[in-house]
Image (tube, rainbow, N blue to C red; front, side, top):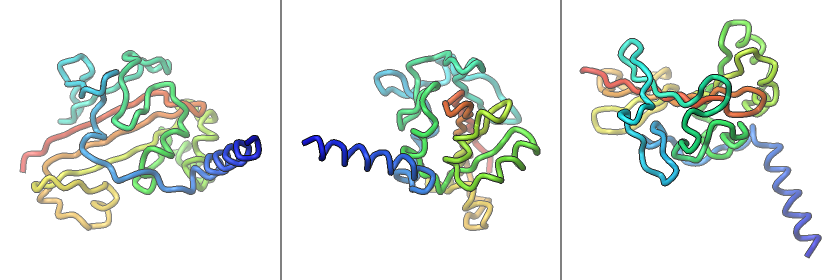
Length: 188
């Protein structure tokens, strides 16, 4: 019995170590661009999570920029809370749809020395403002979602885009420091 438990633990450690090399779960859905309360209800903008409008984007964020959540029971659809280990994102989100940024050009140059998002998380404490793991989608008139990468590759008819959404996790010292959602409805 001890051998079986040891083997299971060893397998879990191997999977964790390879987190930057594995694919996350299913592709993003509309539900990924909302936050949820402790019982799983969508938190509407009237609840106070809505922060401001920036150039037509509705911005919702859940940090107080010290890493402590203003709304400790709020989480993403896939169960990420402010304060969680950033490595949890690797297993719950489709990492092939993710992008990782620093907050200025020097950060981006330094981030480029790391090959995987897992490595970037490992070194997130080296950046004054942390790093950002970003997921973006556009929605067309038929309700289909496409990643920003698909738009950049010209795989989407941009005249049919009716909504843009993004989800960003700020990572600092290997922890989720903030969760920010942006949504914008376009007039076509």
